[in-house]
Image (cartoon, rainbow, N blue to C red; front, side, top):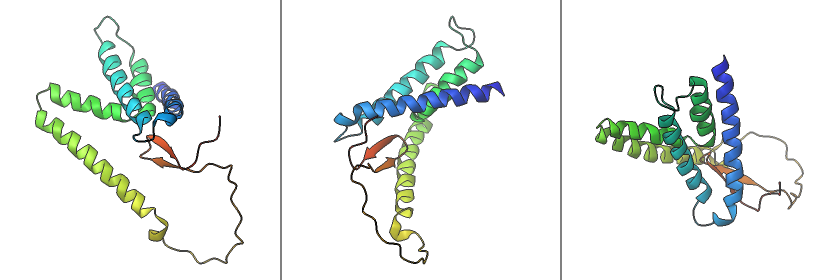
Length: 164
């Protein structure tokens, strides 16, 4: 039961770190999602570095719970790209270059397709309509920020986000 607690706490910390870093990089993320790119790079580095540094039988060996906290919890909450990167590296290191390349291509192409399909299916024009009596329209408050979660990796704000 204790491993679940470590993963849960690490995931919460990783998610909070991702949100903070995303907020900090909003001003420079106009052309590209630099926050997400930076998050994926940092998370990939951490899982590769910590995972190797803390292997059993090494100078800095860590308990399984500590490894779960950092690698599954923090890195998983921070970015799932880190797990993908580690698995691809393991394939390449074992000499399975074709499988590593296949993993990269399939993951990127199929995940992109899945996001696009999910986006298309969630469009109001494709959702079934429910007949209801019309409600009076209210003016929306311009102070409220609306946002969309894009690929679950960063927030893309349609208006400036509210201050913390």
